[in-house]
Image (tube, rainbow, N blue to C red; front, top):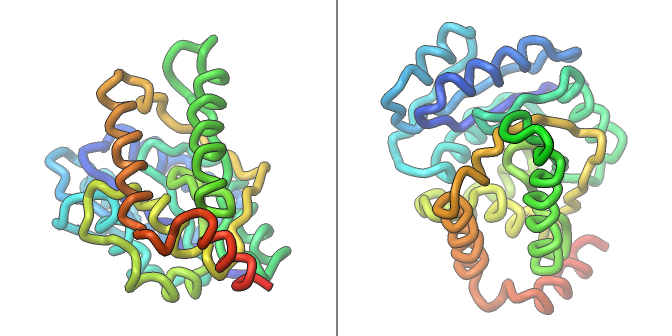
Length: 243
């Protein structure tokens, strides 16, 4: 069975991190390691991770791209799972990662959806579908495959090492999961796994400013991938690369 390392970048999210780590401690398959990357938090995030007995790495360069990459670099497992601090993985989440990769040796990365676990109860399902549906429908035509969703994704360690020098670690305005999608998807298979479940916070809908920031960062991430990553050229290169 493949060893699974879990990376969780965090900044000032102690309460949500506590909930995430509690869910990981109850997995049907216990991960080989859990790595919390403290991105210069000013709250008790690092202490929460230490008390939970997981590995803590400090990354002072600002932004999730730098924090996530530092965590991936430090992983020992053959499979690297990624959650956000507000993610609450289902009890069989790690087990399903292993099964998915074992079933399809040619797949480099997998991702799945999420359900909101807070906010107005009657709107949780609708908002989650709206949020993730817009993400996938907007970006899949650009990428030529489904985009990775950072709150619920995993990749082979070999796939990370193949692109680790190319990702935009230093740009805090990049969406790291979308950036990784651009790099991984050119010559490797990325698959959506419907049974890969996590709960997440509804804070993307906490206000117009938060929604606007996410949209701006998404557009910025697309722009930094230059003219040779325009959809027609990317689709052509991808078809040739995955044959």
